[in-house]
Length: 140
Ligand SMILES: [Cu+2]
Image (tube, rainbow, N blue to C red; front, side):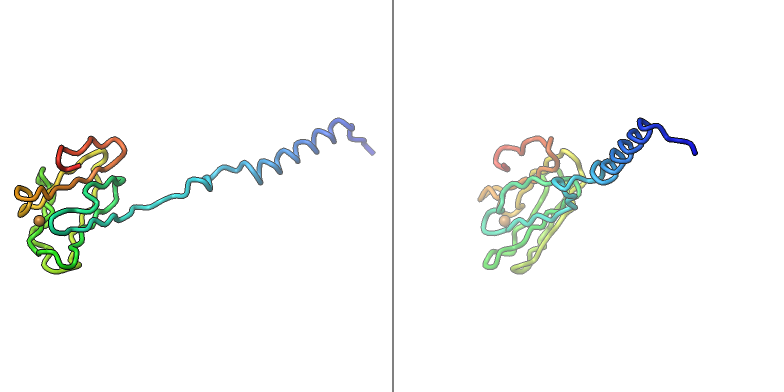
């Protein structure tokens, strides 16, 4: 019968213990403190004559949904100054919505109501991404 040296046994026991700790604890994967958050929808209320909130900050892939507040006129629009989107007269009744998904990273969209931009300063902005430039004056 061969005898296994005592040091070899100790080494094997240590190795087993290390492997057990590694398998149970340090296996990697997602951190519980940083749960994955999927794309979200941010709601902006359209009323006479403002957007609330006036400016929103979102992540690329998020959607902004504008909703007409009850009691408001139906001639409001959501019109991008740069021409990327325009609701037209989509708000034909209270609760009617217009929405757009923003995939443009680090971009800022200044928008206004084509009916009430000049009379009432009805302006707003959407900032996409952490490095989005600030909105123009009056749109912030
Ligand atoms: Cu308007």
